[in-house]
Amino acid sequence: DANVLAVDQPVQTIAVIHSQAKDKQGIYADYQLALNGNTTTHFDKVALPTKQEERALRRFVTYPNCLHHVMDCYYKVTTKDRQLSAKPTLVYRGMLTEVKRILDLISAFQLIHQQLPNARFVMQGYFTAGYQSSVENLIKQSGLNDSVDLLNYKVQPTIYDHTDLFINASENE
Image 1: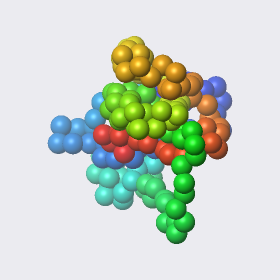
Image 2: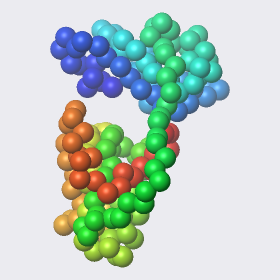
Image 3: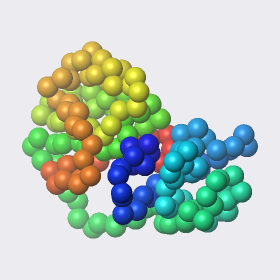
């Protein structure tokens, strides 16, 4: 969120919150910046998954007019089975942080890799402070150095062009 707010002269800034952002104690710490901005700026729009969530947050945020309800996701049901390629590629794209359960994804990929030794796991995103070493250590300890790629986040998600399966184990999406 801070990286987005730091962009010079953006056309518009939008934060997307995929899950409940508040509990009985208040707004979750992970969402404070997205919902209330900082001392110099705030998001133009904050997209929330339900109308109920939007109403619940209005009285707790600094800029309530920035809140908007949007459909959280869309998927199309397919009638055709898709065969995995000979070298299947699994992808995770997003924040590389503890709540996204990246270590669990690596452990799951280790099991997949035992059955499909040609499989690759590509993670594209940006790390939160101090988490990168945990991820890199587990990759090394699991013997997956040659099968796991860590890529920097890019705005254009061309990573999906050659993906067999997108995986996600997040606690809040």
